[in-house]
Length: 349
Image (cartoon, rainbow, N blue to C red; front, side, top):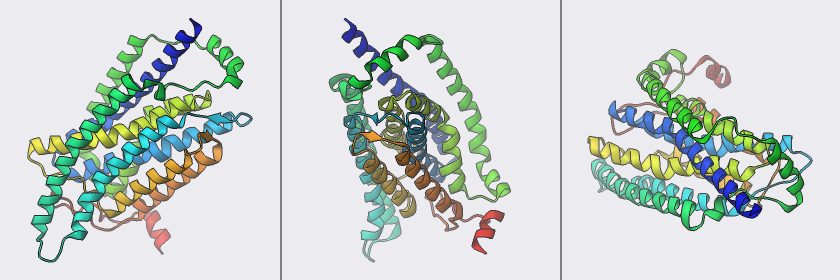
């Protein structure tokens, strides 16, 4: 009987991690739809890319770092099966971004720019449908056929410790109260997101920061606050499987659900949005996935792994901070070339 209760609790925590990621990603979905309605394709691409990078490097890195510090005398372990599933899905999403990008470089001189853009758009829309199918299959895999892969791992050596924690832990609010709070905050974020989308270019001009830096770095830090807080709390309690479920699950959900859904919504609205995120952005995404995969390959964690992920995020943030290369988007607006801020001028002097 105790085993059944324990299994039910672990599965409930896994579902809670998925629900946390879903409500947290509502911000990105709302911003994407509002930006598409205003024909700001570049903002959509940048904000979604930034959300994936933030979850893989910032949220997960902070969780591993502070979790390792809080449990410095205990070895933190997690089940690799959950991470493996998320990583091969993220790699599939990366493939869908790479192919439209490579079309531009594979085309010969006989192919016109309009022909290349048309091929990239058609491929992106087809890939988006495939990505949505893959995400639906992932949900079935996670919640039904192989849900044991996503249950929180319990170590036999720590049973006494876990039992003490279980006795002390009591829910502050009930399930429906918590769900109501999540929905309420999501609605509030939706109202605020409309203001953010409308003022992002004005903020770029007044702050002297590029739209790419604001969308890729600053917006996701605020938008991923829910995942960030939840993942760190679970890491402090030595429940890394749940922290991974929040961070990796959120990145997977953005990559395989929100991104292709945005392409489909743009298609419906008659807006030409493809999966070509440009070479610098796509390369950052690829390296972030590879670095995180190597970090989690042995099923154990310590604070040094989290620190490395955080430092990688700082390097990528610095890259977009100093990036002044114009980025030509389908709407014809150059969003990468902005006046360099004072700090950037100091470093470039």
